[in-house]
Length: 198
Image 1 (tube, one colour):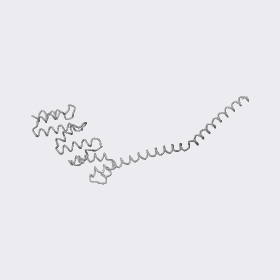
Image 2 (image 1 turned 120 degrees about the vertical axis):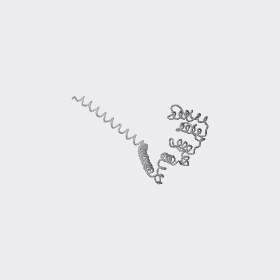
Image 3 (image 1 turned 30 degrees about the vertical axis):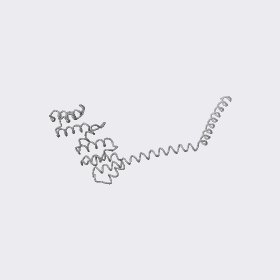
Image 4 (image 1 turned 45 degrees about the horizontal axis):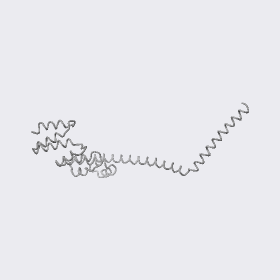
């Protein structure tokens, strides 16, 4: 290599080192200038990640605790500790358990308490079951008029049977005609309409 080429290579090397040091100095100035906000951002990020992990662990422990309590209640419905744990850890699952107990024991009081439950379907089923157990035709009729009632067709069939027992065939036909063709109990309603109501 010639002296000119060596000088040129040396200048390029010095120029690149100079740029490296210049960027290092800029970075150092930036860090010194924004040191507190950068520390705050890093600390906040660590707290957020730690909080999210802690919250997930808390939710997981609540689920495990409520599942254990639910299984204990299935084995022994009189277990008050398991009942209290389930009620505190998972109120919606507790409402489902109460609903199953209320239906199994025909306990209208329990079912009426569940008519305002937030758990999916519990309020609806409790309303229907309470009316059916009491034999309350007005409550069943109001239930059939509820938007999205899960047991609407069964309630209509029950109202028709009650009307047949009272000798009110017109009312029975009216209730049976409200059961749609796509209902699983449509064929039962049709049979009752043709053979049960004269």
